[in-house]
Length: 296
Image (tube, rainbow, N blue to C red; front, side, top):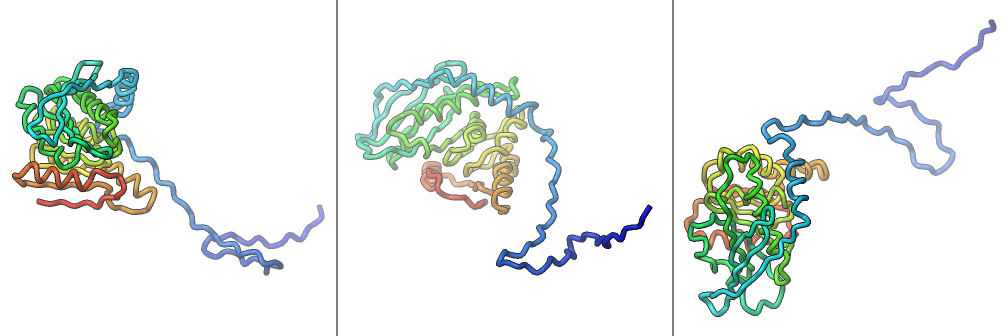
């Protein structure tokens, strides 16, 4: 068998690339790209309810054919500058949910709005006018007590989402500038609303977090991407640690930034109306990227 002279083989090294022949045209030189390492996907969270995202996707999908259809009826307001109306809309599995809507008289443009979630039967119809005079549509909704036997608490949490949808259907309201406030025993419903509706302008949570729903609320908090004002109470630290975690990861993947996209504020101020109004007015828009701030 005849021998053939083969050219020598030069081993390729990314750190010492072979020099290309001198170009005969004005083409740009070629450069080696850095190696890309693909990290393995993170395992599913083990502290969340099984099939959490699928459960809520199916629950909300089942309500899409149920018109929220808020029915408004005139009510009395204590100020001539405000208009008050009673509201009834279809909540979880079409059950009627009641509330009160207060708006400024003669508003010349669409209004930012607040959905305030209150426990039913605890003077829910009082103090309805603390925000509307500042140029807001203020919907106060009565929610039933949490279902401690249901780890998803789907009835109350679905009602909270439907309350936001009801306010957004009104012609006088700007649907992109809606805040949600949860108080007392139903404060957790605001956490659920923020986790299920990523386009809320801001959220306020003023009440304890029930231990029976901790896993669901941690999952909602991780998925939230809206600014949060959080008062001190049972479970507050958990929300503070978990709020906006997934949103921060998504932002980091897109931009390389490690900053959180939400603000978390702990406050002990006693003037509720002033504190709430300042927070809501500062955040009822979707044009800012928020920097985290914690106030003790």
